[in-house]
Length: 227
Image (cartoon, rainbow, N blue to C red):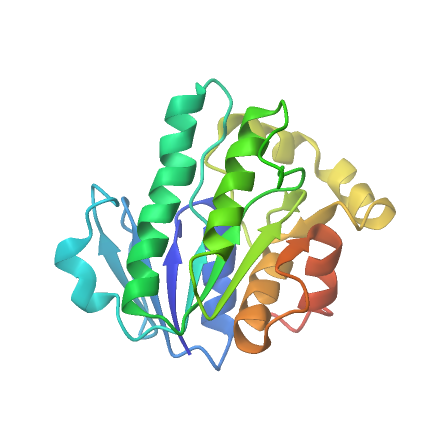
């Protein structure tokens, strides 16, 4: 299986990338982003583009893929709706429209968030925008389009969040996060579980197109031996 990954330098994307490299059935991972990942292995390659809206010159490298894991996103904190809309909706749809044209048999998976508003009419700005993004992605015509809505994501394997406030929470709340994993498994997941779940859905599909946190753990299955 050949996979395109957007957002590979972020907390979620790094976790997904690690799981892709651990999976023997994934032959290639093409990471696309504004920042280089650093050294890649035999399975990995990358496109570094300052403007992800303009990938015309890279289209020849974006064909022949089986799945796209879209993990690119920003926090809505401190952003007005117009700016958040451009980064969250317009950029995602620009990439998705390009990929469905180049790879009509592709499975597209979008990392959204718990509480996303599918009605697009709620009072919470980020939830409306992500709801619109989800709805329009599912209508594009991909072979499969799945929306992942994780709640609290616990970073594993030394991964850190690029958002300072989030990383402070992770650093100070380690014991609390461990307790939440036990007491509230429906609301927490890990970067490992999310990565494994996205890979499995790309391979075999799932009965629901909107995948909540509780589904993620069930799809991911038990923790395998890590290499």
